[in-house]
Amino acid sequence: MERGLSKWRKELTKEAEGRTLEVGIGTGKNIPYYPDDVEVTGIDFSERMVEIAGKKTNDKNNIRLQVMDAEKMIFENNSFDTVVTSCVFCSVPDPVQGLKEIRRVCKSGGKILMMEHVRSNKKVVGKIMDILNPIPLHLYGANINRQTYENLLKAEFDPNNIQVEYIWSDIVLFMKIINN
Ligand SMILES: C[S@@+](CC[C@H](N)C(=O)[O-])C[C@H]1O[C@@H](n2cnc3c(N)ncnc32)[C@H](O)[C@@H]1O
Image (tube, rainbow, N blue to C red):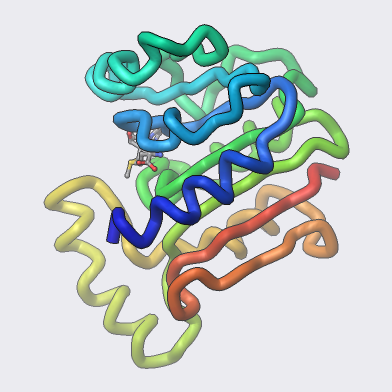
């Protein structure tokens, strides 16, 4: 899966501009792809993840990392030109609160670039994902049935400003959102 995602990691990061926030940076898989002229702040609420990601920033002056909860960010309103997430909103405990925080810290007119796996809208596949969800949730804290598009609407993003591209079936999505 990771091999397939690397093409999309390049797509995701090449659109980043200006002051950029990556939420849930994990082990820093996107770090190698950011253009050098983009100033990136990466956050994760896991100290261990930030430590591992830190090893990928040794030769990069444009990337800084912080331990922080996406649901309660310490940044001022309208701080970032771009916000990036990849495979994060399956595991943020309160996804709507995390998305509201992204809307707050991203500048109005700024862009939010997301690569996320979500619950299928296909009746049978969606149901199977609901039934199987407790397994990945128990094993590695990730939900396979998050409805991230719907959560964006709950977080009051304007549906007219959300562009969705399907990477794999209707399960892995690339979303580009212009902030209200
Ligand atoms: C599946 S990993 C994805 C990591 C990385 N974005 C990638 O594409 O490889 C999800 C990450 O989101 C982080 N995370 C989940 N909820 C978070 C929150 N509320 N605040 C900050 N980080 C969070 C987890 O600690 C984990 O590192």
